[in-house]
Image (tube, rainbow, N blue to C red; front, side, top):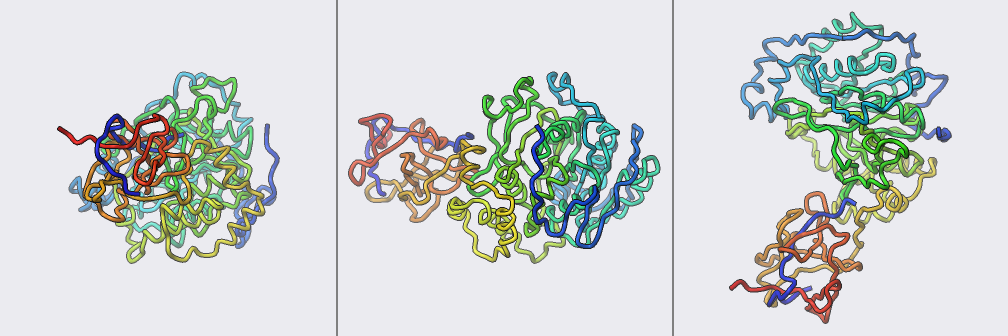
Length: 548
């Protein structure tokens, strides 16, 4: 697809931009969950019944605890310089070690959320809050725990489970003594610690947490999170109305340097989505279609979300098991939230964001795999690619061709039949339904459109997207098969960069050499073999002005 570039008459500027962002339900039949089932209010595993729910007692507030770290922990080499600390931990651990475990946090609720009335505690289910951790420093882990204990209505908090994914961090040897002091002022079994015998990631840890949970709703939290005022009632209130709802809190960042909880209420609200590499992305919500509580102030209405962001959500405990839990073949990190999201939507559930529930999260800036001593010698790239490829094979139907086009994988995917069998057993809808009904404005490229480069007749200078999501196209020396110089023209007529640019697919438009969202992008058609004409502006062709 060579295109002569001589004079850029009217259509003289090209740029890139991202793809657009575009009553109680009946209980479904139980699925094969790999040995887990519900029976008489107690969970049962292949190894035998777990402990029955004990007599529950409300805990008194405030719950307090002081952090007691040894001089060796406080003076460890990784804390002596900012660079070493961020390489090892990804945030300001020195500051965290000197902040109170129970500190003042901002009330991030909007006025509409503060006015909203939720059912009384007697009308809401109790929650098991599950905090999974691996090599989490003691200060952030315990601050998370103290926040849950103090900012949750005591009559709604059944228990807090700490699930250790076989940590090796030295300071965690002090965890037991801290918990002993904490438990002295709490009812029995309000806080439980479960240690796993192997380290295989968040999927195994979360599945174990749900197996251990004793109360009707499970709430999964990352270890470096911190709940804020009024966080729990909005999650439980929505699930109490419909057990097939999965509810995600509004996750706000905790600054990695100052550890202040930032953000709050974004307007218009946001929702989670994905791209064709199965990476999580964020889109603006549609105020007409995604605010799903009629008659409720729009600033506190639940927001329909196609995909959850990761490790923070609330779900009916038995429904989690009925839907098949997490795929146990997903290892270490990644893909589990996409697999869970597709399974929820396609197999009869719904998912939403609760804008009145705010949970802070430290988005650590480091390579978690590089500092994991138990991953030495593991090809983590291959592991992560395998995770996503399993999701594509089981859930994307014919659209898996697009996933493997943009993210090829060569390797053993393991046994996919248990998850395929689960999908059949749950009578899940096709992925086409998910595209049409849930993530309705996702850009769907052609499977195999014409592809080529665009340059002068001698093929010395070619258009180059520059590897950016937005901004001007460039003219660079032509290099055969260079990804940023390959373009496709789908049947709809856009001029699309052939490969994913960062997290999006982008198309060409005429405006100061720009790149734009692919839906709504200018359309083109061939005139002869070498001239690309505008469909939207008849009589105009793609050319280039020579400066001067």
